[in-house]
Image (tube, rainbow, N blue to C red):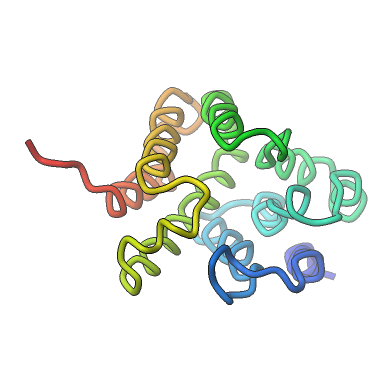
Length: 185
């Protein structure tokens, strides 16, 4: 079986019954779109598979060992690199960890993180067109902290030499600025 097809099947089964936060959209749409973004940027099969599987360890019963056995160590490494280490920690602590971690990630992990954040932002932008600022009530933290986090992601990637001048990071920058436009003084 083609590795990407296998990743789609594993993710679909793992995320079965889950929906995107505050919507009735099946969760699987998100990892599929992340994989598609990575494919659009010419990423390797391992990176695309990791994008499709990036939330399985955090949000389902799938383990890193399962991913390593079903795919390979590299896919498992990439998924681990996109997973928050302590899901039970407070939101701010988890996000601070992510911001520090992004400064040091390798290019493959950086691509998966960019694609994940990009799709999250694109989804918010689309939903905001329909529901306006009410969109922020879906999140544990509102617009101000979401903006802090996404701008922090850009600042962290700016310090990461592996991600300098990548097209995917440039698109992420544009997407953050679309959702959170700079205020003119």
